[in-house]
Length: 291
Image 1 (cartoon, rainbow, N blue to C red):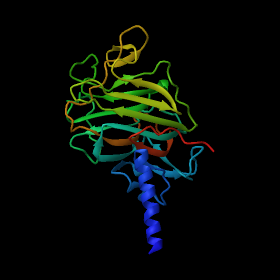
Image 2: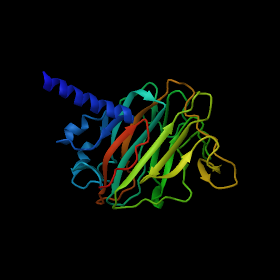
Image 3: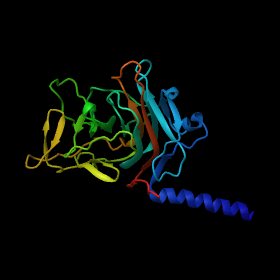
Image 4: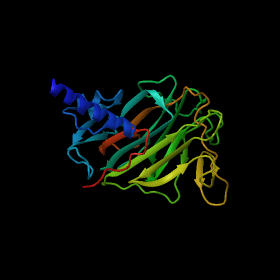
């Protein structure tokens, strides 16, 4: 009886500790098999192209990470998708990534967003402006051949390009640019804050690389201007208007997608990337503490 009580106290304390930190999901890829790992996620693409690796970030308590591969002859990379049906108004996501190869540029990368009603799998609607009551999404991405970090974002007040009938993701390029480092573990953390009340444009988003804030956007900051669908930070030319992510309070942040979407490879060139130590939380997480 005493052993059962002690076990209950230990488990309850661990659960309470996670709740106190705001953690709603974590993945360290320490599962005994890929099949067991996939059970932690709601949806996946190309699990055949995934495998475990013994290469882990410094400070990680684990012994393995997850490798995703891109074979231009057979697939478009891979993804893991996690949904949170309860939804949140503020959410952070941290993960580690290591680009082993750079044969071809990354088309789209990892991020989070919301669907109403919540969905256990990604809903693709590229090229369309969200209405404000059904979806939004944003991702931290390496920008094409330039290999610099930026945001790629779909939201209800997004800016269009030359064609008023089609809206591709708005880009937010940091100033100064933040270069993507290859063959080295990188800690990425992103944040989304929804607009409240829903009539306001007081939503925000930010991301950090290795604990350093790279860009933070909200109502009145940073200074800059729009050039078609790209916001360009610069001093003395207006400021960002803020995000109206939604016009319906039922739309929440309710998914995270660890994604490696590729489309421009050459036959025979297999691109590889590693992921590890994923944490999704209602509070800032920060990098691992290096031993």
